[in-house]
Image (cartoon, rainbow, N blue to C red; front, side):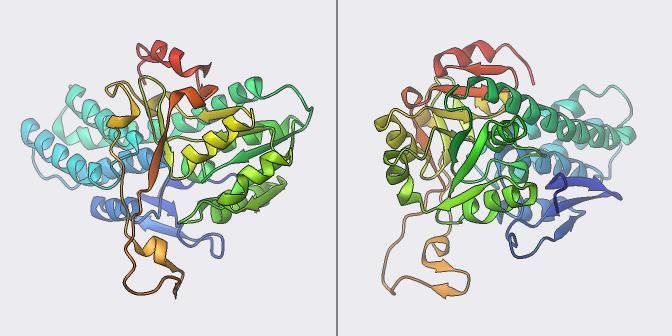
Length: 349
């Protein structure tokens, strides 16, 4: 393919989503014209990744708004808030979802024109969120390149889950840093954790890399410590679904253990995420709601059942990496130590 990947696109009066549940075997789009279908697409992970979820939710707000039949401003806003409530319920951990919905609701509240024109303004706002996210990811990539280890000249990086173009409006956060390193001749190879139970690393991160010719090696999650001990990894770069005011970071399950392993091997561990992923209303990671998903993700791969009957399951989708394990949080405004991100609170996005 070797063309830019845009998982969420507005085209011909509807949203086109890359169906990420069908990758890497099938590259296909799902057409979304109703907010109910957008909520379903988010909850079933047709679209996934915190920034991409935010963009999709913004378009979902518009899709719902254009179906509101009232000329009364207060009634319009009440119905819009109900639409937002439905979308908020889809994925509780990814803060970009809530940030985008808040921004869309603020757009409606601040609109001084007629109610008839309000839905059109919401579409403009959603398209702006979409475009801004691509620019943000490119800035994250550039800032990330500046803080990667200076030696060796060509680095071997490790990532977990998928924080690439598929997880954003395009380009990616953690994979944006990888892309920048690759284009600047600083990347020798990317190691991608398979990322059980949904295998986003094996399926999605590797797929993105293959499209662009980036050298990628998929490893089982349990191989990370061995690879670090063998000197194969120079740095770890991951994304984030929510970062609290003290720098604690929620990301795909398995990230915390990866950070502990990196610390044990004195390998720098970086988080790459937009400013909108920082939730300053939460003081620390213990307050982050952790989504639990259906146990079928654990006991079933494709059509194959891999566990015996009678087994119980625990399937949290995320874990929280404490701030002290993170060397830097890379944002569109630069790279900061976890203790320094509080300085970004005054920046509105």
